[in-house]
Image 1 (cartoon, helix red, strand yellow):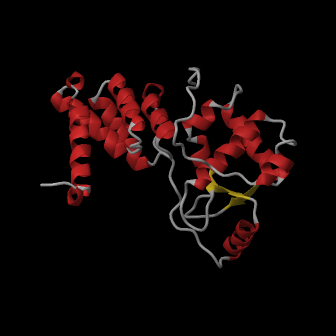
Image 2 (cartoon, rainbow, N blue to C red; image 1 turned 30 degrees about the vertical axis):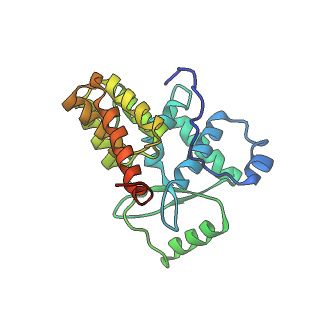
Image 3 (cartoon, rainbow, N blue to C red; image 1 turned 90 degrees about the vertical axis):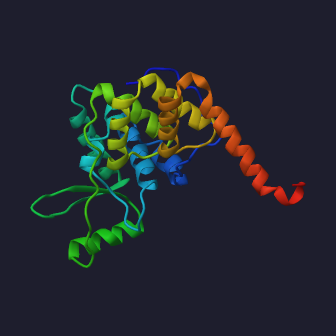
Length: 234
């Protein structure tokens, strides 16, 4: 777990909306820190998903390092199970066990009218699910830093991006990766593609040469000239 002091939110941050009823009705009732962390994590995770039917699987939850590191106890898996059971009993989440290709995945939905209707249709066979989302590959302790940087500064980690991050850790020093994230965030370029470009440039031209900064300034000036060339003499 990262015990470094939080440095504050950047000027431009992404937000996850929560229903007002969460603060007025639910928050006063929730006494378990694990349940509170779980519910907030699920709201955050579902907000970043696309499609009309949004849910999270038990595999996604227990495979998420950030969530599981924040759950205290001698057996985090048991604490997670207890928190899920409590959130379902409280009425925050809807739980569905769906038989699919010989397996019985556990699905969790936010309890609202649309999801109650969708679950009824799933149970009756009127609605079917496509391929279930797969959690990112297991992340070893020494690999956690780059993944944490990505989730803190860019967003939800996908299996494809996870593989690219693992490759980057093999190619570049950890200090480079951290500084590349800071560089991209300072320029409000919050994408892995941009960060990878910084690392590639440092690798080919030298990190301390300042070439990347100069090249970025050149591109910016060139872009401004193209944009306003009709206003200036040639």
